[in-house]
Length: 158
Image 1 (cartoon, rainbow, N blue to C red):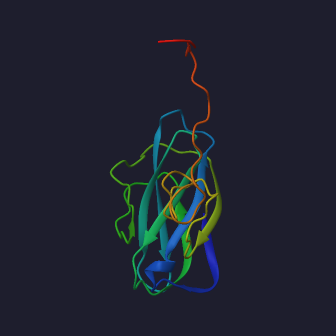
Image 2: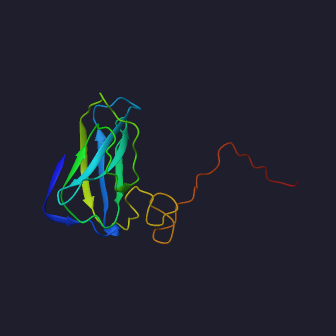
Image 3: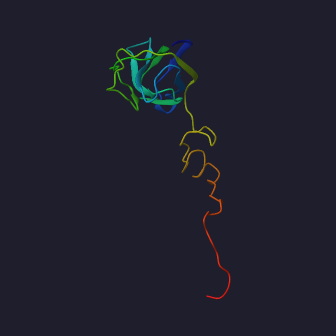
């Protein structure tokens, strides 16, 4: 996947350098690990990170690129590659090159910038104590109100 920006993007502020997108394989076998790469290019050397997917699960990718990276003209997402080496982001999942593995992928919701997180994004962020609840910014997490099963109460004198 190649994305060319209408004007160069500024990657000098780490607080605004978070790349997010979803990716899903439509062809991987259950449990099969595939390694992929992301690269910002143009305007200087490549800025890269590796990430992995497992089977056909939808994976929410979030990569935090370092500060002071200058401007870049484009973004590339490379499915099924070996270890990229110009690492400029965390987390960086590598060491599992998928030589000989190829697949078809759905890549969606590509965003770059600051994201304080929301209480409805399905991700543990924004100070949450559980996914999308608790902490200082979200509603309290629900408590389990399911009555116990297999419980017998006997009323009367003890």
